[in-house]
Length: 351
Ligand SMILES: Cc1cc2ncn([C@H]3O[C@H](COP(=O)(O)O)[C@@H](O)[C@H]3O)c2cc1C
Ligand SMILES: O=C(O)c1cccnc1
Image (tube, rainbow, N blue to C red; front, side, top):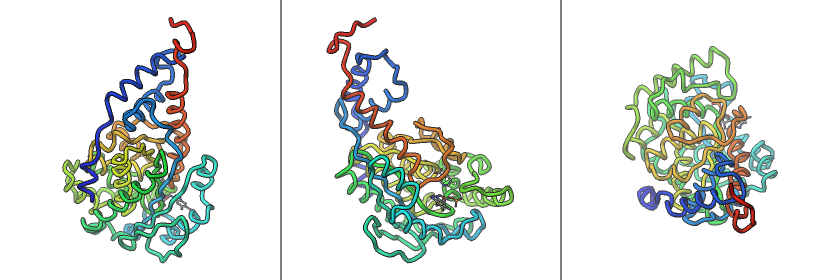
């Protein structure tokens, strides 16, 4: 399934994108005046393969949840059981992601791809647990390559299902200690030093940060830098990643295969997108960076991916919150491309 999905991903449609650029230039506004939103509008046309692109809605955020064996190393102040408790909170509608989604009319789907604790079945919770948390990535592989592949395929499945009823997919995550695995992935996939890629996550003190940097450096050191082939990418993911990272990588590839735009959230999605890019470079042509988070490794990931974030609000939450907030900008860019009159049609004199 992974191989077939990778093979199904096409680059953006150059003709649709050129038509969008041409239309943006004759719309009743000075050429280029919508800045980055003009690139977004053109990208959406390229993804859809037509100009104007369909409006990218409604949006659906998939919150991939998993636990991390590296929690035992003291890299986060939060107990591991908070992952399962927050999953229940999101499913009940009580988290920040739910408030933002309600504001924007977006759907929230939580996917258990690797939580440790037992979870009550509930509407809005998809059970796809590959294993109950990863192994401690500071001591050895976080998971097997086969488990990584299965978790990637969960993300592909979820993207395919959601793309059938939604015009835009949004990445979300929940997993205590997942900023440690994210930093390790950023180091491996960009070659960055652990000190630059590692941040304070939920908010850790200097002592814990020093320990986290050490853990990230040690883990990333076991893996050859900059995996170039799909096999190397999966191996690196299995060594230092998380189950939600694997699923998110698959989600990005699955969205691209369905030709639906995907808006990326923070460091967890950004690091997973590095994996997706190594598995399937064309997939990233259909992705948008919703925001840049306060976690320093996120900017490194976006830079390596060549993605320009739509927002910079100093968010450091995850759950899909920053990407959701960017979605109205994506929708507005599409609506402008579709609805704004041209100089000719409106009888407005050009310069
Ligand atoms: C109550 C709560 C809600 C959250 N929602 C997202 N995260 C975010 O913080 C965690 C990663 O940070 P670290 O690596 O420092 O543990 C992840 O669960 C991520 O989704 C949360 C964290 C907490 C505590
Ligand atoms: O970048 C993020 O999305 C982030 C940062 C800190 C904690 N959780 C998520």
